[in-house]
Amino acid sequence: MKDEELLLSHVLGCSFMDLYTDYRSLIPLKSRRRYEGLLFKRKRGEPLQHLTGSSEFMGLDFKVSRHTFIPRPETEILVQAVLGVINGQKGGLYLLDIGTGCGNIALTLAKFIPGLVVLATDISGLALKTARLNAKAHNLLGRAYFLNTDIFEGLFPRKSFEIIVSNPPYIANSELRYLPPEVKCEPLAALDGKEEGLFFLNKIIKEAPEYLKKDGWLALEVGWGQAGEVTKRLSSSGKFSSQRVIKDYGGIERVVIAKRR
Image 1 (cartoon, rainbow, N blue to C red):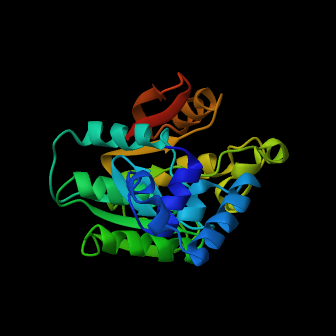
Image 2 (cartoon, rainbow, N blue to C red):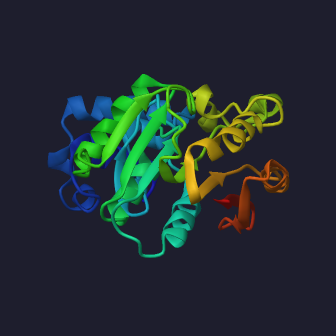
């Protein structure tokens, strides 16, 4: 389906097929003007997901906004990696999702793992507002909790979590200017990894052992060419074992997982 057709069916509140079977009766002037306005924004580079207010992730629908990073197919690799290390365990598990955005990682895992309790954090209160709406939509408010904070700030280091997962900002500051216009519409805080793109990854690696239980897992999404440096820093910390790097659909090393000693 083309973007134009998706936007039109969104504006009209109808199905894709209705556009062709009942086109003339579906398009009042008000809707036509709204559609033209959205189409203009789309042609200027605004993401389709921001215009429709929703995005699909692992077969689930998530509300998104200009304050949240749009879920990417590559991040499904991160979720699948966590599902793999959980390996059928059900109940009594606690997960921390750092930089949750719209909540797609934490809430998808809670949806797929019965009894999993998730704490989703984000520095953006507006992003957390969207994440709460998604938790409500997926009937997960009883197992999903949200905290407006920066990484581990405000959390007590009690080794409380079996899993810490994060898709942090990992684009180097010097590369931000070269991003496609569509990506530049996303929140800067969700993109800017500072320095060489490793600022937040390094901070998480350094502090995560204080919050992970023994044999708990740290799962990170990383950028192109960063997996080697991330595994090196995990090893040099002396706190992790059983490291594994997983490639995405394009063959890029996209996810690094490690077990707490």
